[in-house]
Length: 363
Image (cartoon, rainbow, N blue to C red; front, side, top):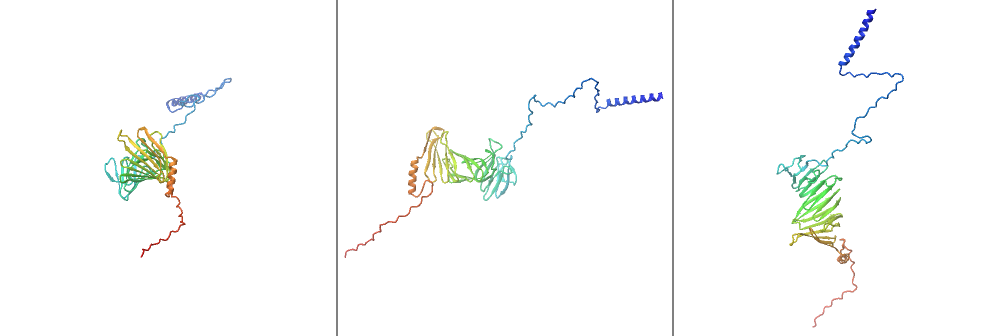
């Protein structure tokens, strides 16, 4: 019995020693904390609270939300894509240096020149929903804005183009440049045509939807809204510009040679003429401006020298002169508003014409 008890104790001690050595050799073993039993009269200490990880903020400071700055989506693509060519449509890629037939659905770099032949059209897209359509016998150059690489522009060399841009297009994002004027901040649909007419160039701008603004030589149109059409005729030597409202009423701002321009409401059939001449002495450009009403009556005129505020003079036509001209026009069957006056009723003469008696020669 003593031998059996001795062997039993020896087995238990050997097993405990083996387990201890095995735990020390196992690197994945998690050490178990020693359990201490509270003795009578001891004060129980609370368990330590786990501190949150450091965030870099000082005590009392509010946590800042994570940064949500994301790059803004660009309105236009990097390249200009050609779609739906019809007839003769060619492109002069700057990398090629000569006109070649366009390839359908091919993207070309900015700076490319596109042209169409008789009875031909071509679409040039700057994005999925924005672009221009070149009509027949048209030549245009697509480019980025030098001041804003994300903006796009078209230089119309000749012909006619139609725009289809978003109605909510941000300002200064799309423009059409011509030798006579620049159409800026264009949104919606518009039709712009530039054609030669003798010794002058005729620019016609019609807004279908949306709006645009026009900047020209000594004049600007702050807003040309939908359903308005303006015609700008400019001599090739820039000695004369003529503005006519073909459709709609809109405001035209005219330069006076000073820091205070004048604004005029241009109505249909009203005309603004601007003459330019180089002075023989001093070589400065002298500008003479005349605003005429729908009936051809002068409403506003002034002359100034560019760069010389002291050589600027303006004159509003006197109201008394307008009333006198109104009376004269009425007698001629017209009016200052351009509407013909009512024809006067014919008055019947009370006196009857006396019969003509022929004298017989004496026999």
